[in-house]
Length: 476
Image (cartoon, rainbow, N blue to C red; front, top):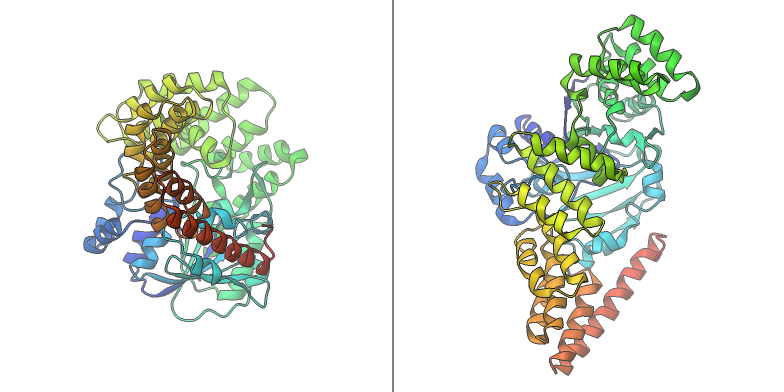
C-alpha cells in the first residue's frame, strides 16, 4: 500500500521531495498545468546553498501574487529548480485530454516566449509511438500525454508520483471531467500500488474551486485504501449528478454531520439562501479552509478567469483594506490591482499597488500592467519606473525589455531601443518578436547590416517554429 501526503498548494512538494531523498527521479505528474518556468540562476543558487527541507520551505513563495519577491520558487515554476538541483531528471506530464487537445503543448508561441527556451529545445520535441509528445525543455526530459496514452510507459530508476487536484476539473465550467477513483486504479495498474503519492489541493490560489477541495481527500483515501473512501466517493457522485445533488448531499450529511466539505457542498446545492448561509457558517466552523477568503476569490479571477462583478470587487476591497498586514493581504491588493488595470483604471491600479507595497518592493506583474496602461496613453516617461521594476524580475523582464524598446523608439532613441531588443532576444531566443523589434530599431539607428541580419534571423526562426508545429500537428 502506498502513502499519500496532501498539501494545500503544489509547490510544497519540492521541499518534501528533498526530505524524501529524491535524486535523479522520474516524476509522473497528473496536472492541468505544466509548472515549468524559468527561474534565474541566482535563485537556484540560494536553494542549492539552503540544503535542508526547512530552509527550502522558507524560500517558497507564500502566493504567486505576493509582492515579496525574495522567494526562490512557487506553484508555477517549482519544476525548474527540481531539475536544476538534480531531484528530477525526467518528467512524465499526464495532462487532461482537453488540455492537450486545446493546445497546452500546442501553445508553441507561449513556450517560445519563455526565458531560457531555445529553438533547439522546441525542435527536440517529436511525437512518440503512443501519440504522446517527447522532448527536452529547460533541463528536463519531458513526455507529455494523456493517462490512456502513457499508461504502460516504462519508467526507469527512482519514481515520484504527484497529483494536482486541478487535473480532475475542467475549466471553464468547473466540472469533474473524469472519475478520480478510475484514475487511481489506472495508476496502480501502471506503476504498482506501493508508491508514495503527493497530492495538492490548489484551492487557496484559486486554481481549484473550493467545492472541489475534497478531491484531494478522495484521492488520498483511495490511494491509502482508507475506511472513509466511500464517503468521499459519494461526494464525487453528487458532484457529477446535478439533478440529484441536493438529495444525495442531504443523505450524506445525515451520516457525516461534521464534514465541512459536505456542509459547503450542500450550501451551494440548496435553494434556500438562509439555509445556505447557515451551512456555510457551519462549514467554516468545522474547517477554517471553508471560511470566506478574498484572496481565494481574487486568485480565481487570475487562475481560472472567473469574473468578479464590480459590486463584489468593491466589497472585496473593503474587506482587504480592513485586514491586518500579512503576505495574503499584500497578494490580495496585487490581485485587485491587476483587475483594475485590466479594466483600464490606472489610478485605482496605482492605489492597489501602493497598498501592496507595505514593506516589499512590489509585484512585477502589476508593475508591467501599470506600465502598459501608461504606454497606451503615450506617457512613456510615466511608464519608465514601472518598466524598470518589471525588468528586475525574472518573471517579467523579457516583456519589460521589449516595452522599454518601444518606449525608447517613441523618444527617438533608436540606439537604446536596439540594446533593449537585443537583451530580450538573448534571454528568449526562440521568440520572434524581439528580432522584429531589433530590425526596426536597427533601421531607425541607420544600421542597415544589423537590420538585415535581424530580418534574416527572424525569417529563419519562423521557419523553424513552423516546421516544429507541422511535425507535431500543432495548428500554426
